[in-house]
Amino acid sequence: MSDPHTQAHYGPRAGAYVASAVHATGADLDFIAQTLRPHPSWSVLDLGCGGGHVSYTAAPLVARVTAADITAPMLTAVQAEATARGLENITTIQASAEDLPFPAGHFDAVLCRFSAHHWSNWSTGLREARRVLKPGGTALFIDTTAPTLPRLDSHLQTIELLRDPTHGRNHTVPEWVAELARAGFSLTGCQSWNLRMEFPVWTARTKTPEVMLAALRHLQATAPEEVKTHFAITPDGSFDLDVVLFALTTA
Image (cartoon, rainbow, N blue to C red; front, top):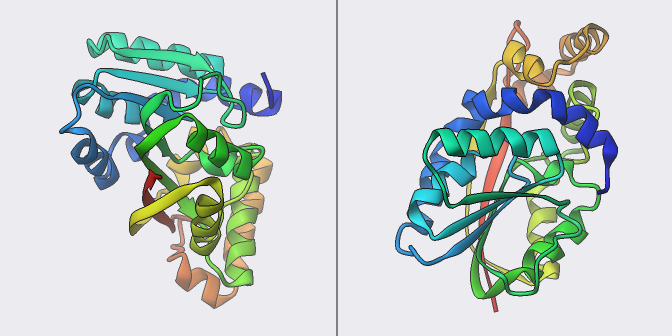
């Protein structure tokens, strides 16, 4: 299994992601439910499942949900929560996005929420997602995105890495659109919104060390006004992130 760094980082934090209010709620989960509701026979992949909230949303609406993640303790926590909720059609599998152990065209839908910015190889992960999706299948990718202006982009990537050493990269919307097309997806819809990150909760979830907390607060305090305005940074360190949902299909 690849990327032991990510596994080691997220293993002790699995419970925090199952309990996370940011991950457990949102209009995007409602959109997922609306997308799946007419399809009780579908087999669905929750790619990079994290705390499993996409799986818990999908399971009552489809035949089968496979929750895939690179971190074994995360999967243990997800399976325990699924059992507690009586969701017997959720199974878990340890796998990286870049090397999925499924045949081509295996799933009716692939769902991925707040995972892709951690992947070791984003392009390969998107191609794998496309490979395991049936022709005419449905895919939803939801992730935080980067601004196109370099100064704003640099600020976002830096705070993400200081807070979480497994951070890969937040991509811009144009980068997402281009890479999804190269992977073989067709874009059918796109939605965007702001997600408020409460600084104490945001850093507690990843158990960010004190030295990194100090660096984060210094970076925010000394940021140019255009950065503070764009991210709506408040004195307590809380700020906004841009989130985009890409709705997709395949030829």
